Image (cartoon, rainbow over all chains, first blue to last red; front, top):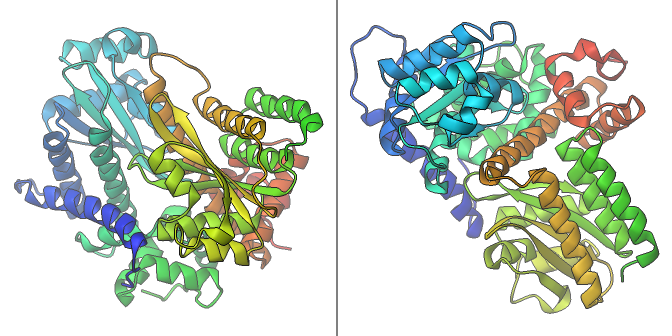
Length: 256
Length: 241
């Protein structure tokens, strides 16, 4: 992985450090023998880790698609959060659904008053379960999306900048886990996530679009294949992307 | 030097993009173009913060400015960064005398044909949420009135992002910034798709997409998203020749 010298390294290292730190928190979550597959298990630990880090009373994560706005798969830090996630599908309304649909975070610091107007059914039910604030983050990278992450709190009030960062970082990590699940390259560990810190460059997104055309696949799979290729070659995503954009590299169906 | 007679038209045009079927990337791109226009000898670029507090590239009036903005971000050095860190404008900075201040950036900007540079903060309450950069081919001649006008355009950018001033403005700001960043990513993905489809460079691909959006009266972000997720919706644009 090429390292930039000088001040740029500070920015990259901040992002790298944040992502690595979040992944360590997830690693430290106790293993629960549940029989869940690697990615799902890690997502659950992501939810519990984030609950501790923020802090929050609970974190839930729903997988959504355009077709099944009602009835996506749910992962959560605890049974109450799981219930609240599923409630959104039962009622057909809620911050997760809105965040996914609108492609932007839906942050409601005051579920008791403002939230009641937005989601009359959901807010009332959540309120009964002691929730006073909800913050939903879509799991997305550009046009690719997988669902949304909900943060629940028992007190009303805005998320501070300090709390926003780990929430957004975890949403990015969750998205990465879900995208990698597409490529089915086995139970992935943390290292590709660290690489993502360098992957903010515009070329990476351009390369994602190019790989779509080269392989004739959708955007999520293109993202996964790009990551898998970089991982297999031991190179940074940024470097691989640069080559693809420059026309020096074309992924083909047989590439790792 | 600000072309005052053009100014009224510029503000009307900017206001139009605010109300008419708002698309955040188009709004920011048009704002940078208008900023450049209004200051005859300049090109403009705009950066916004992400939730991690890092500046990210959003829009520019020319490709050479885009490269200079990306350069500033890569090396974390330049007028935009200074403006962002201090929260105050950087005005009339002569690039030929900025070697100590920006040892990497100044020569690069001079190489690109610019002689002076200015950066204006985008502010929301006490926070700086971005910066509007001007690169001029002349040496520092922004008068105090000009400075106020450009700051006003920067403030309009903030208002455009916020769209409303309510108790929830802090939340709305975060939501808007994330949405803008995500739109930017979608556009880059779409550029990649079109570049490969038509065998052209990414900049040509962007021109194709923007031209198509305009002639069909569609929002750029919507077209970009469709290019990536639903290409059959715009066969004219996405089908291989």
